[in-house]
Amino acid sequence: MAEEVRAEMVASVFKVLVSPGDTVSEGDELVTLESMKMEIPVIAESSGVIRELAVSEGDVIQGGDLIAVIE
Image 1 (cartoon, rainbow, N blue to C red):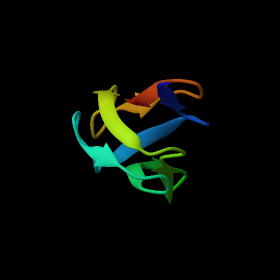
Image 2 (spheres, rainbow, N blue to C red):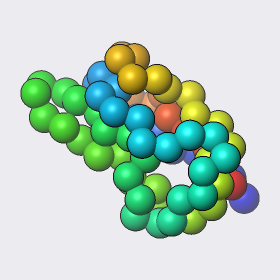
Image 3 (cartoon, rainbow, N blue to C red):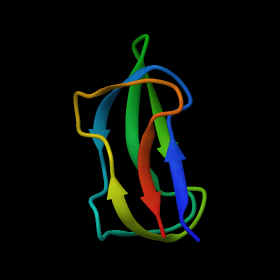
Image 4 (tube, one colour):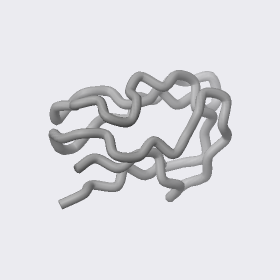
């Protein structure tokens, strides 16, 4: 079953650490967001393969926006 990783707040995508096809483990950092000069890691809540990456460095995302899909 696919897990959709979504943004929890308005933020800028500071760093993208994975690519489609990468294998990730629960707890791995997928991207780093920046909001109000704070860096916020986005962590995989399950293990699997990145099937979709919906953000790029420099993007501004809103709460609820799709970041990645892990299968």
